[in-house]
Length: 89
Image 1 (cartoon, rainbow, N blue to C red):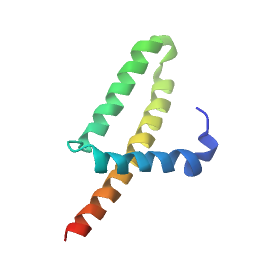
Image 2 (image 1 turned 90 degrees about the horizontal axis):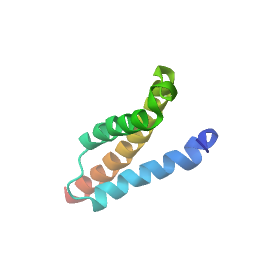
Image 3 (image 1 turned 180 degrees about the vertical axis):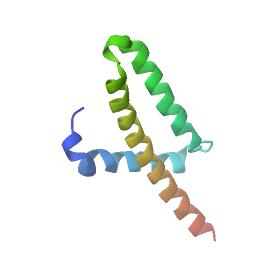
Image 4 (image 1 turned 90 degrees about the vertical axis):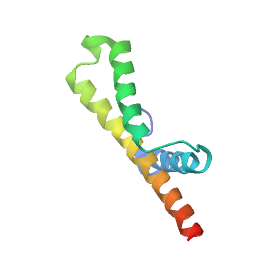
């Protein structure tokens, strides 16, 4: 969990860039996949850590991190697809 104190400077910028890259390079990517990613990550962490380590407060904290990730990837994807649409019009 490094760089939590620098989210806007380091982490968010990279997540937005990742969303833009998905818009440009992944032809079949859809935003709905991000909710699947969140659920899959939660399931994997739950399985790997087990119920004692992945208790409800831990699940809640990680759910917030996964939502942060997907929201910024989504922002980048939307901004890139908006630019592509504007260019086509």
